[in-house]
Image (tube, rainbow, N blue to C red; front, side):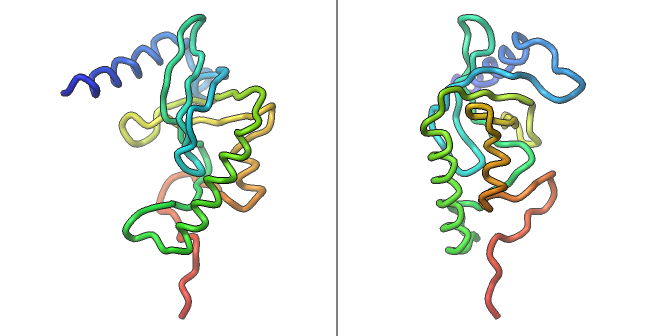
Length: 151
């Protein structure tokens, strides 16, 4: 294992060791966070204040929603455009945030991926994406295509 990978795993272990116990399987948090960058419509890089004087940087994927993909070999141009629009929506939603809170933090099904919810000034990013048509509910399994192919 290389040093960077080992550091990342140690950070994740420290993250869970210091944050306390999750309540009834709902995940960890809430924590105040700073958004470092928007990766795509449903994934951001954050720095969460997990302990007094201690913060943790991680990528956080929104739980319970899925937005269109921006890139990929098998992704249609229509979905790529929708993915860019979802990313722009997320960026704009987070842009003027006074307070960002993350909660429900837990491991995703892929190693090292964290899932959770983001609230900006008390408003749910997941709900905003759904209401604006930039996301669909997602509970696992096969994702449906975003754009219908023409006959």
